[in-house]
Image (cartoon, rainbow, N blue to C red; front, top):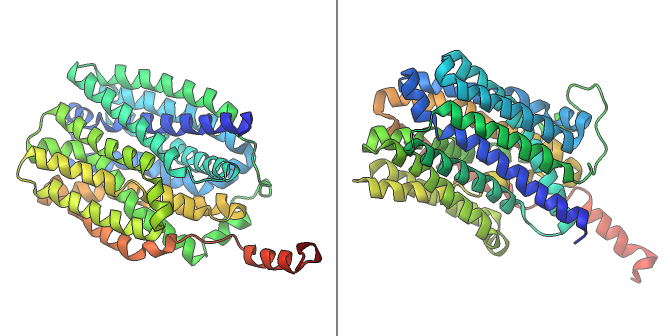
Amino acid sequence: MSEPLRAATRATYVVFAACGFMLASWIARIPQLRDHLHLEPARLGWVLLGAAAGSLVSRPFSGPVLARLGQRRTVQVAGVVASAGLFVTGLGGAGGLWVLVAGLLLIGFATSVWDVAMNVQGAEVERRLGRSIMPRFHAAFAAGTVAGAGVAAGLVSLRVPVPVHLCAAAVLVAAAVYLGARDYLPDAHAAPTPGAALPPAALRAWREPRTILIGLFVLTFAFGEGAAGDWIGVALIDGHGAAAAVGSLGYALYLAATTALRWFGGGLLDRFGRVAVLRALGLVTIAGLLLFVFGPNLAVALAGALLWGVGTAFGYPVGMSAGADDPRHAAARVTVVSTLGKVASFAGPPLIGMLGDRVTVLRALLVVAALQAVAVLIAGATRRQPPEGAAEARAAEEASPASGR
């Protein structure tokens, strides 16, 4: 492996991990922000919609941003803007509801562009290496979330104020992303025409049935991941009578399970294929949710959170890999897939919150199980596809005089 490729691999790990650490830092503090601002479940759901709204609005334009700035600069700028949003979110507990909403909007707006750019870079590194490591990049993201949630749990126990915690985390994340992304590989493909709101490749990707199905598949798994982040702590505290620190611990356990499978489970995909593995994990998610919701005690609920984490581990990274099967169209298709996936973050918080007002947040999480049943049915869309024209190119090569045939 060349030194530039080795450095780019390290940089990709760092950027994925920093994104996870930043998101988990504020997510793990949701119960404390809720209590300080006296938010009931439905209102909390609408507040959490701020981050999802910013992300959903900006994500379709990630392609043009990448075209103008390149992957390295896009990640650096997005990391700084997201960190500024985390800083503002930290001040939300003291500054009031609208300060919190403004911070979440900034986080959502920046992290969506950051997400697309780092996945496109991850796909490029994967192609240069010649082996599948995308799940490990997402394991680095999950490891960052475990670290963020674990730090948060410790700081909650020590009664460290939310502003102190989140403002310090913002500075750390901004520095890590800016310095880490300097080692990114150069962009491999020509940029779309400057000045176009959406390049032709991006528009064409929105009309591809397979790309849309992959996006819907990612949506179901993203809904499960998002619901875990937004509501595990609240559900454990309100539904199972857990202490605040145990609420944060439940989310940390979920993330630990996700991280472990993403890091060690890539061989399952190589051995059994995407479709079989993803369908099996969808069933695991359903089983975990049933234990989490209906478990007779806190220990069983925490075991359910672990299974929930295992079940949702591969949905997003494999969806990104499936969207990037053809490197020529990877950026456009990853943008479409991740945009559809982000709809879950937009719709999930208010849906769970409104249902929570009627049937409790704990019971409302059964919606996640229903969506996982849909994921099991449409997982076939992720089956590996060769790049367009690959078969024709191989046939032409075999038929040429140089082939000796």
